[in-house]
Length: 325
Image (cartoon, rainbow, N blue to C red):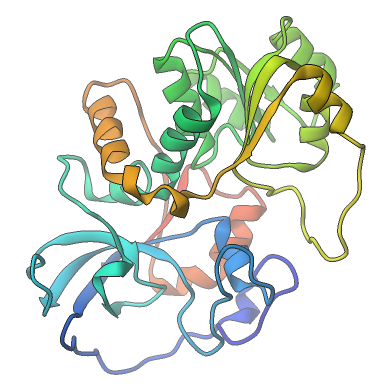
């Protein structure tokens, strides 16, 4: 990355550089990347203001998760031929310390699934829903960006737990996808019609769990449809283009008080101790046919510079990955 964006990173913020294949030193591994991940969090990582992680250094590779294969290892416990998932960046080869590895790809699932189902998207859906949303059978679970790389898993996990699932998405095509691919009971196009009325019809007793990936005016509307004792999982704020200056909106304290809501923020890196168990549970759901995933696969590292902008524009269908292996 050569320059910092003020909003969503665009192709002009990146250059494609070539160099020699590096070598691993003591305590390091050389990883050949196969699938590069494209994630909403990359907008924050590229910004010049730190949030929960430091900004990506200019002149270096874009911070990114990837699935790769170990080419050479000077770390006990890792060997050439091991498949791994972690922070390897947008590059063909990465020399990393073991701390960069989030997961050893050992489950019997397709390799690409470690970039989606058992990547931070699926694991975020599993841990945040279960630990913060605490759904119970019979609860109404509402999910924003319901056809997205996290939301699509949230709906399916909620359904497996006995919830009534309602998805919010931004097109009629994705409404169909929510219903026919991801098994939502109800799906709503929030860009058309009266969102408050649609949510009220879908959840006449109120929303028990709201898994929010968007924030903004959608959140303002849903807050006023929450059931008493409802839980809100704040996993993303994709609808807010910039936080400088600070956006303003309705005051929500009264809704939180009178409805006795629990509103929790979630960042996956606070929950790494639960990662392996979450991945194991997700892999079992997949093999039992109780869960599916979609990938939006592009080929070649030259597709990377435009990928984040495409993600925020909703031009992806499923988890966005770039195949370079």
